[in-house]
Amino acid sequence: MTVAILVPWRADGGPRQTVWAWVRRQWARWPDWQIVTGSPPDGPWSKGAAVADALRQTDADVLVVADADVWSDGIPAAVNAVAGGRARWAMPHQLVRRLTEDATRAVLDGAPLDGQPTQETHPGMPGGGLVVLARDVLTGVPMDPHFEGWGQEDQAWALALTTLAGPMWRGTADLTHLWHPPAPRRSRAVGSTASLARYRRYQAASGQVSQMRALVATFCPTPLEGSPMTYRYRNGNTGDEVEYPQPNARLEMLPNWERIAAPAPEPEEQPSPVTVPPERPSQQAPKAAWIEYATSRAQGTEEAAEVATLTKAELIDRYGKETTDG
Image 1 (tube, one colour):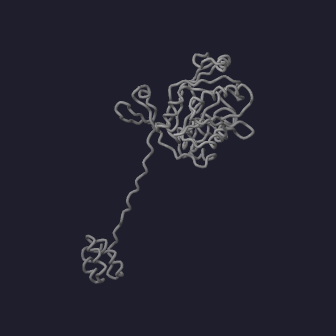
Image 2: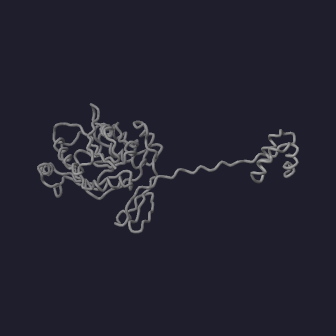
Image 3: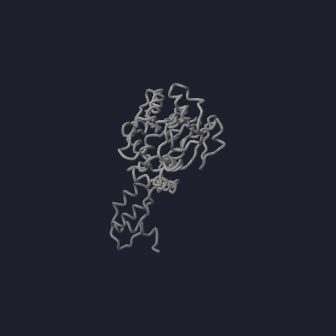
């Protein structure tokens, strides 16, 4: 099982460059994992186009889509959840800790990441920061390249992933975001009017497989078929498995229960074709019709073989009297 880290990136020569250099050194903890940076075409920034560019450069089985300014110690657990088949996509973190500018500078100068002061701590947005996926999931549910600038692309992607690839596995670690000058956007919550309008299309399609596939198909030639929206859990002590339409808060908290990927639906068994026996022909019908009728009423292979040796009169005499018209 091969792993690649896909980092959407466009060099700017500023503080982001220094932050990415630090983050890249952290990824070196796993020398077998490939590190790939992807960039969008010239023009407005598009994270979706950058991720697609990175994907084209690797054939790894498990893919980590990671922003260039974040880190989490929960990465191995999320990778193992996907590689082990317990989830089709995963995120390692619950909370995002945004470091202050001074704290980031200290980390870049060699200070430990843990314990640094933050300017804000908030729940991590699904689809943002760090996302681990099986390869078929990323190829079938790619990030929308039509989001330009920063804002709403991560949220829209999470809605598409949940609808088409099923529930996300989520770890309990924190995600640390290193400081850099903020990107231009309309507001903290909204990237642009166009991005907000496109995000609303994802909201309307959320949970609707056919509608979401149609939306993804506008930029993906082979959108994922879609999986049942179920949350499945396994008891580590007994092996019992249960399934719910929504996350089960109690099982999420119990250490002996873990969320696992729902099994792929079994192909529907096609019913055997129903053979309708021919109706008894009239005495004026050709001999071939009587042979077909007699064969359908024959008891066993020997009698069926004998049918072909009988004359039409013998067929009528033997099989025509067993039933009556009407």
